[in-house]
Image 1 (spheres, rainbow over the protein chains, first blue to last red):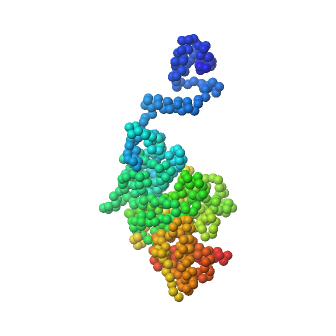
Image 2: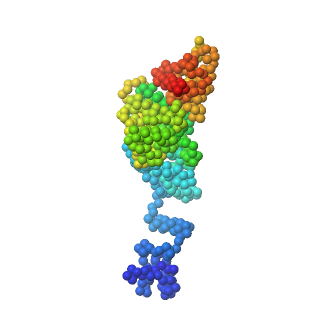
Length: 441
Length: 116
């Protein structure tokens, strides 16, 4: 059945191909590919393919097979590309095996500033999006360029352009590197697009953190600390990860950070002890027993630290991609105790199946501190960490777990619930040793 | 009455961490069962005193100390009443004093729990 529409007063009529005169029939058949036929007053005229026509009912529409639908989609893309409507973009792709030219598509946005202080929401949106794009093993992963032949230019069909990033803090860099470490473990390959265009400070931060070693790239982008300290530069310890409490690899790096900031060695040792407490929490509780989770997300912790040699600020951070504190809280405590806690401390009713109370849940975990094993001798980790931070000069703490944030600063703590979740737990401890006049570490 | 010094940093590891053996290679459970308890039992038989030296380690975590010292009471290999007379905890370096107090408190807390 040929689909025709009358121009007579807008009413529709339909006729079979056989009803048309022979010449019109031939013209109609020739033009069905690129235009629809309008039959009015015994004359046939062509209208553009994109002109508006009333939608036809389901009885008149021929259902497309999936294969034909895909063919139409690809042809449409091809035509658009030939007409210049889709511009092919080229980029330099750096991997373990070297550099090559690739065609790129499907760029994922990234904020100019990756910082959990100055650009918290956008940074969290990026990390959340990165996890969702890369969590699946079969698809959504970062693939090698598609071309098998050397003469052809392959495609990279999903990428993030890091040349747009102007600033990244060590804490955000740790989360970023940890996420890409997970991707590398799952897929085996990661490359960098347009590495030459990346901001030098971003390159420096990621290089010190060991991001490029993680990717397997040769080359060192770290700044030269010899011959005086640039006031804008901070020392960053290489990222370490592990699945147990053995932190020997990180110890030498931590010693260097301690030396840079000086100050009371006992406090610095206690601050790192708090990080070891956090590592024990990750080992004990963060990943649960789900095989599915274990297959997709390695049950690891990622640690790094930084030292500002001018301001004498020491920062230690740890990140895991586990179940998060708001998820484990109802497993640790009886419902009636949580209800009483929330009513007494926050004036709200506890609801287990929501993420709108994640801020309160994180603070509750810091206050209550009991282990999921319910053994009385266990579960002092989180409150211990906060106690150590309280004792440090200029002690600051940032804890992010799902949508819950707890920030301790200037001797006071506050919680908040952000709109975008971090799919894991991030703890950052900071101490300022500039004015305490303690012994040099 | 003789005394035997057991330095955690030198005899066990400068990087003690973790509660159970499954947590890592230098856990509190391993230190307690493989180092501290045998030394204490031997000292008890000989009428000696054991001094555990905390100095020299990189840091201590609360889980390690609790399992090593609080766990000593829970293990019940040595009567709780005798632990205080056989075991002394030492930290000459100021950096480690706070952990000495923590370790002693873990023993007291566990004794309190056992009594109740």
